[in-house]
Image 1 (cartoon, protein in one colour):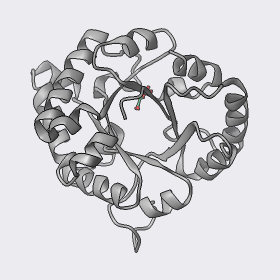
Image 2: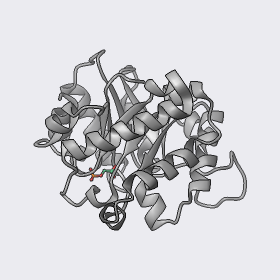
Image 3: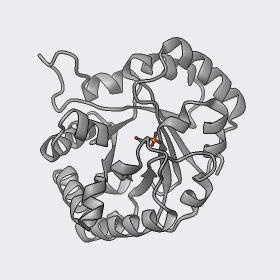
Image 4: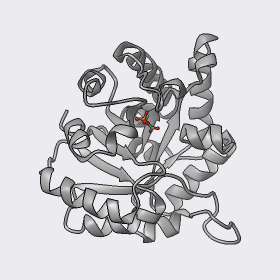
Length: 249
Ligand code: PGA
């Protein structure tokens, strides 16, 4: 999955009506490009609309922002990987910092969610990243390695080669304060080494995306940073023109 990846995380924004208009405008503007992968992560309630709008556009994929660990059953309010796959998702985020820090998602759950995703044929994008106080304490690498090791624990090397990891420092998400390309590069390098240590040559193929206050001004330098294979973008993916510009970097 080393082809550059541009992933839009809409979070809890953009309902079906707006999603329909967004996708009509975006697909009119965006010409398919074989040199990159685009993925939209809409709200689960807008997923069907986005999938429908992308019929005939196999160059753009859709994913869910979260899944539960089990395939079905009495888990009111949750979405499962098989249901997401049936609805047209091909990817799922796992362990996004908002899941971890607002909803208390544990490393243990990220491990199970990655397994559930693969079982249903979804490609997981495992999100990792440190809090500001952890960075200030100098334990960024320890935190990232712990989250990475736990999330990937049950996965085969083959899966690891075909999935993505997103490095999203928590202090950079939605704050307007992005990591510098140098900081991102250093952590991405560390993640790459950890993946190779874990999975040998397969660890060279995993895409490592950067996320956290990416916008149309800083996207080019972050995208060009060593060891950065793509971008996971929240706020700046909510505007058609801005998002198209970022995808073009
Ligand atoms: P942001 O969010 O681009 O709004 O900082 C990124 C993310 O949470 O994936």
